Length: 212
Image (tube, helix red, strand yellow):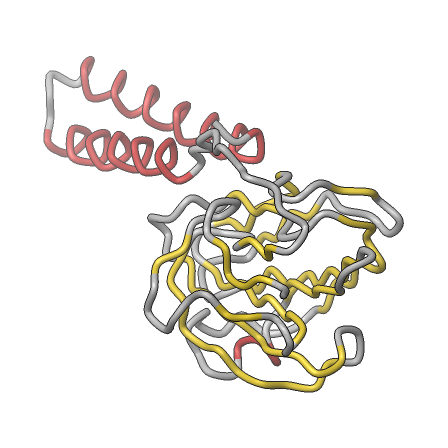
């Protein structure tokens, strides 16, 4: 279970216990029974959302791993001020995906920027430009990569534990986005893309691209 969800789980659990207790002592009145059932379902969803499965990450200095679970929705050529000639790979994370985020490559954190913005639907075409997000640049002897946690209409809380000059390992957990979101990964254009549009990916397991 992800530690980031402890408070959410405690709140929903407390609400469920209170409503269930009231429903019991009210003789099973539908007036209290229905809310207690809804609260119970919400508790199950919250427990499911904050799951944090162990993953057998295979580190490889030439591989760029997916930082999260989701579906690839965009692959675009761009010019980036950190990576240079680059491609941006965007994935959409539904509320049913695992939302723990993982570092795509090993290296040193060059910067961590938090950009305040809108909360448009995560699948909107311009969400990467206008939505609130946390952007990280990482580099090693082989390449530079930039990756971003992008908030959505439901995802209003971005958690990022990385700090500038941190030394991190590929596949290491670094944060999460609560309740639906998207992620952008900006990689060198020279890297060979190994995923396609609409392909499902898994954080720390799926290789998005590899360097020659």
